[in-house]
Length: 419
Image (cartoon, rainbow, N blue to C red; front, side, top):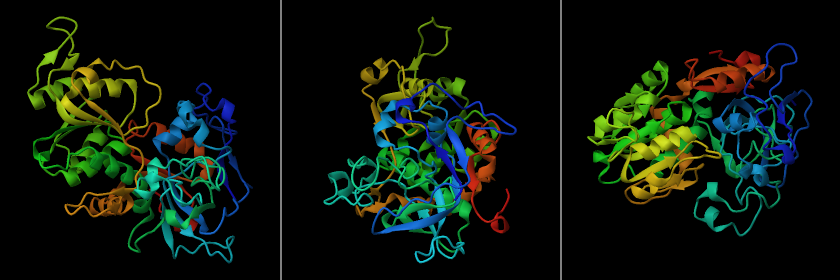
């Protein structure tokens, strides 16, 4: 099978940046990522496992951070090498009697990539898995599989950037017949956004008075906007976006106000009637606000975005860290003084958004949101594996190039809809 393989040794996992500046032309390569034309097909780890053939596989911000060497050493014990990246996946379910036969697309599935206790054949399951919080599984380095927080970071499962991988039946969701592959590949990132929106509390009884700020208008920021607007139709939402195409898409998804990154403090001050404070005299740049937003979603995860989130949050506000952050150097005095909550939001599992408290899987809620907002249109461009340097470069510069989601296209040539 063909696969893009990330083969950096664990001891070098946190080495200096080795990619990001993507080479071009013959022999191009992206850091430790290589295209293997004859990569071994993974063995089935045990009962309940199936072969699947990816059709589309998205390129996520966490994939880019891994490739360019900027991800945290935190991940070293919970990944296993060499692994095939790719966790945003729509695939064909393979006939178990003939796994090497061409798939006919008759049974498409969406992968829920978290590798919890059930997939790892651990019984009894941990407390978090039993409660439906699969993203918080405490056994992600144990059981019948090598360490791996998700498919796409585990050497035993393979990943979506390949023509074949394995998945446990508990990870698979059927794709509605009328859906496009582009809709299906957007479900996993949408599930992350739904989980963050529900965890923020913006759907409560006072949500109509909430002022919500979303930092970043890439894929995760736009999907978080769609999720927040869906559960809190009356909230006032300000989106911080660098590029005009991002603002246009955010307007379509329900944003009320916009600001460029350099203007966020002024924009939130006007929106909330807060007073501005500065460390450089009355005419200096705004340093922070006395009041501010009820909830801030940081969909970037950088030093600057976290500092901005603290600066524009109102007293007892909540900062939802949606974008994957690494090492940061941020003054947390404002977090202490304003009594802010800084909340991490990772992955998905079971949510209880309904008034009657009925538990629902995040993926089911995400599928409803994808259909309601036609989110498959956010897949801007697709590439074959052979053009992976171009694909990764496009994904790394998506906003500047007017794009949102970039994906690898593993479908047979005759099936592809070139965008």
